[in-house]
Length: 199
Image (tube, rainbow, N blue to C red; front, side, top):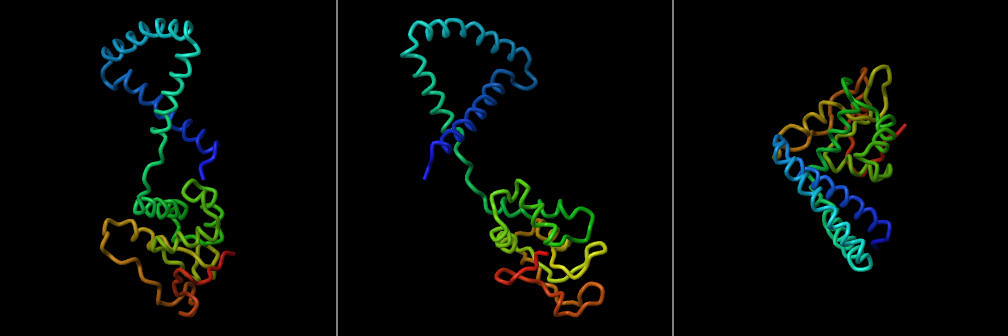
């Protein structure tokens, strides 16, 4: 259900978009002469328009505001969601948090990711589902720096998901021995539906 706050936010967002469009139209990049002409025309038209509104405020002011709000409403419409783009943005956000390390533990990833724009709209349960939906492999036991034995995500898996190969399958779960000589049963990958260690 759309609330007044949602309407106000959309009009505010659209007003910003309209303002930027007007700014770009008045000052086209690389064309200073045209920018001067357009700004000059606006300066010439502004006083007569202001006088017209001042003489008939009950008619022109609401009409002007109404037209602006209507345009802003349409301009502020949310862009259609692209699932592939959303998936890549989440994978990229996780990869940036991994940095130069071989991976990241979920106990570190969850709080950082939930505080980032990429997952600010999610809670921990939905974030967990979003990670598995992207094809990210969760390893039950892995080492990151001096800490080992915690669930985490490997950088190599993330990099594989970002390679331009749309028809290739997602990286398979790890079936080799665990980090630091741990048993195979402790280092296998987890997928959606399994309980993940978060601490």
